[in-house]
Image (cartoon, rainbow, N blue to C red; front, side):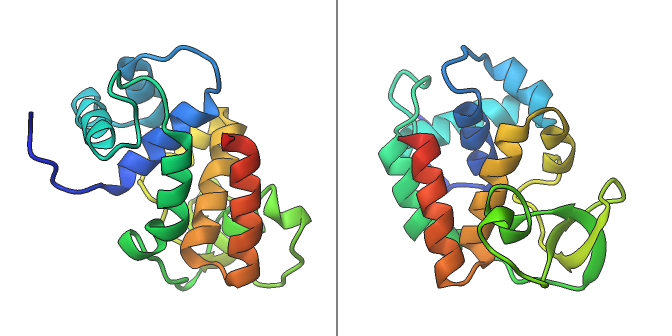
Length: 170
């Protein structure tokens, strides 16, 4: 077995994509195509996640409680993000569903993208291809936005994001 060299940002994206699929069966090659990540990277990511205890040993079932624990307590430290310059993009964190209905704010956060129609502070996505991957998957979009709220949000935003993630994971 390969030595675990630490989690990478796209590992989280892949786990969230599996979660977004719900009870649907999935293949690594489908994840690669849908996320715009190479098949070899998906395979290595699945192995890292299994070794970290975020996927079961069969590499098919999510360890939901472990993922939630990592997202809440580890993610903001392992993959921190600070809002950047004002740019055009796609809303994320508290500016995107489902938190945009719970939090009123004049401060928008966006993933920089020419495809976006909002203007806000730039938040670098966990992986460059997520802007394309969310076009066909609203569940993935909401999960990624909730995770961004954990990365950049204030206390209340983080609490609401965790409540929403628990609803979706448990």
